[in-house]
Image (cartoon, rainbow, N blue to C red; front, side, top):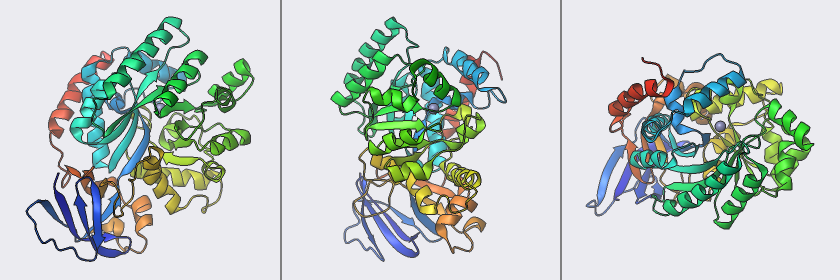
Length: 424
Ligand SMILES: [Zn+2]
């Protein structure tokens, strides 16, 4: 790995030069002149451009790109059974190309780190590794209370964990518990203990819908958060997706444990599962708030810039308060908070941080005038301003060109029919 020197680029109100050495940002200064340029792999002219941290998409099901647009305008349960029916036909090839398409989309929209929960994990890891992105991948527990499935999944989790020791360090292994309504209590306890014993994160859907809350109250006499808290699972190692239907006590519990809560507004809105996410209350209680897109089947894209804007608009709207969420809160939750959840020094442009960032075009209407860069980025720009993306010190897209993109699109078009049983 060599060096990348970006000259005269806009960063937080001034023109600077940024030097990347290996996988880190090594220097930021007004001017950087290198004595020996022999090991310099790249000089980028930053004039008319800005550098921004890579986005951390902290909840998605990457290979669901293959299902884009396939189950529209259906009620939640019909939608879910349609998705599960299609998922019976998943195979390694579909997950591999679907994940590659997700990586193309994430790179083009400035995401450098994503948290995935899906099946055929090793195909997803292979695809992500080839695309050069940083990621976490869950071994998913989903047993519907079936004892045989429970014990088989425990064995497979151990096997996958052992094999993950050979993965590229950019791709992190973690434990996935799909939800309280699809995983038996014994397996929730086993999986979270396995994660603790091996120092792994746990990625779980919690309190996504009113039905999940009501069913839990009926069968366990408590909320989903109380149910999981009795098992002692909460800690800063939990990645809790959704958390829409929370009581005040639930918020206090998640906050006190320092849980990472991932808000996925587009999916919540599109599936009409709720939108009154308690961003400020959770943050005040001590939770680390991250943003995610959820899978393409319920979004239908993986665009974190769009996610920031819709998060802001919905918070402001339902609270009837334009000051309900601020630009710094949005930007942190879309970038550094995700990295922080995994103990990574990234999602920020500073000396010594991981070199995960985007170079964006600001010589266009969306950034003119450039009075408030953050406001322009969140509210007026579109992700097509993202030109070049660097992940772990390596250029994964240059001037919107990604190696192999046409082949990826062609393969997903070919595989869609196999997945749905339709031909297009
Ligand atoms: Zn999800």
